[in-house]
Length: 278
Image 1 (spheres, rainbow, N blue to C red):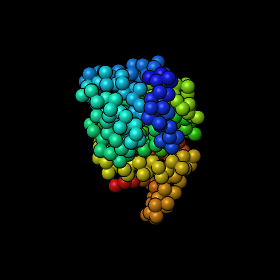
Image 2 (cartoon, rainbow, N blue to C red; image 1 turned 90 degrees about the horizontal axis):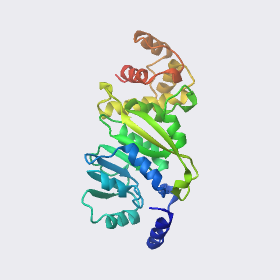
Image 3 (spheres, rainbow, N blue to C red; image 1 turned 135 degrees about the horizontal axis):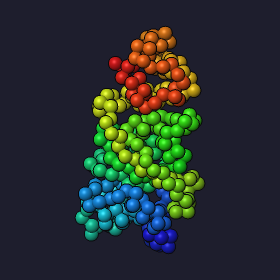
Image 4 (cartoon, one colour; image 1 turned 90 degrees about the vertical axis):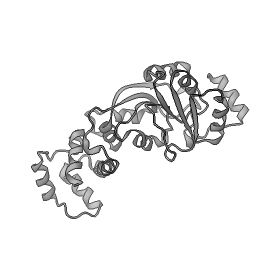
């Protein structure tokens, strides 16, 4: 689907892309091929596509995958997609919000995801035991944060959470002109693969919930020593049982240093969760 095709379809549907839904449709076939090549989609794959729009990427996914589940929140676009793929028996269009619908089993997520809900989508799809692979077009500023570095400014809840369950392995900046309307943000194509040997303490959804609560609670204090960060976290949550002295003693007993929070590694955050959630 090139720009002329897109304009023709939008005219036929009398449809204007909605900014609040992040509706930026891909019009560069070269980028579509790059996404497909990076995805390495085979006839054994069950694909989840979030926000397929007018189906530019979906066209190729249907050709290569065993099954495609395409979740589209816009009723006009979901109706259009149902008609467009009515002769294909390996695709199901699911109308609704990705954060609210029941998500079918899938092995890979290949999507140009809505940018305004990137964090909730990552958490919903990948923060769990046995997550799928992810090949995603996302906002470049978020993509940069997902690749852990020594720059503490890029450390955030989303970077710690994502790297607990997934391993980012590639990032490619995509020109804005590859989409219509042209977005005001820089975009990047990333590939995520599941982490091997996920810590057993994170195999249950309740323990994952507690872990993410801890990460979200201490991350505002990432430039403080971990004792101070944890003390402030417990204070905000009205838990007065953990004094600074008690926290310091617990850390020492578990061979954890009282260093700056941004110097902590993923496995150390997991260990903190084990210690303080029991």
